Image (cartoon, rainbow, N blue to C red; front, side, top):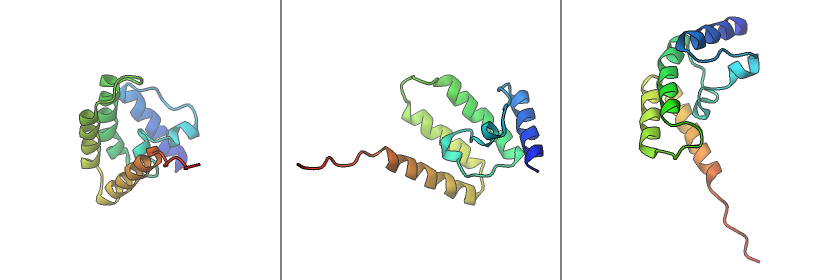
Length: 108
């Protein structure tokens, strides 16, 4: 089953114009960190991958973050997920926000 999922991901990547995965570990890496732990069907991946690819092309690594565009991309991704998947992505986003918060400096 894992091998067929890997093959499906590679084929989808080739069709979408993205590089194919070279290892199973890379195949397990989510399209975006918010999707970590979310199991996607091939159809869901086919709907979501172009949304994320378009966002990444418009906002390459190192460019200034556009919060409105990022929220719009997340909203588009969430629209293509089931309610359970949406809950997982929302929980992932909350955990990511919490991890970014800086702890209060200790008074000495």
